Image (cartoon, rainbow, N blue to C red; front, side, top):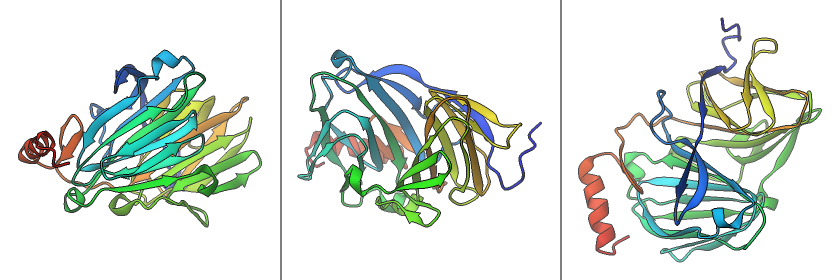
Length: 286
């Protein structure tokens, strides 16, 4: 029985990622893919890529199109070069984030700039509302030094990529979804309790190192490394580490409550719009 106070977010469902590959054969773990039994609106996809074997990532993600949503790439280790048809170029390095609004469409690539060593990070897809799906593409390339880090208490720290935590606002502008994106690190035995978005925002915790307890002490859900916890409604989130260091990303965003038509690299509102996206791509209009 859930004994969390009404204001405290608890875990509604847990999700374990599945191994897959994308791009030119990059091995990764797909955590959110649209097949979840629970509504993740506005979040469409979450991948974790992590390997110290060059053969798992060296072929990268050559030129491919997108329309109608945003891609968010956050690097923990390694070097990845972004280039797109709008003329943007940026180098993703440890601690940096790239928030790309595909809007009406572009073609981009993400290619490793290393031949060995660890490549580790996340890519998140965030939907756009109908009114913004054909907006001009936009690219936000945020270096690690511009992402604020704050102390949440003894042994608890956070990096604020987007949204607001306490009095700190992240550097990424997220538009209609008012998204929050945090990287939280907890020393052994450390805990924190923080406000997270609006009470009805869709939110999740994904543990990428150690184990994290979510919810009331003594009645929390324990999330192991590689597990995503979908959070219920509430105004605050309590996280706690056990006997080892723990790290997780925490993401929240405003649901769009609009029809979703999705096929491959395009996310629109109707099938006709998807067909138009493919026609525009074939005609070189992205």
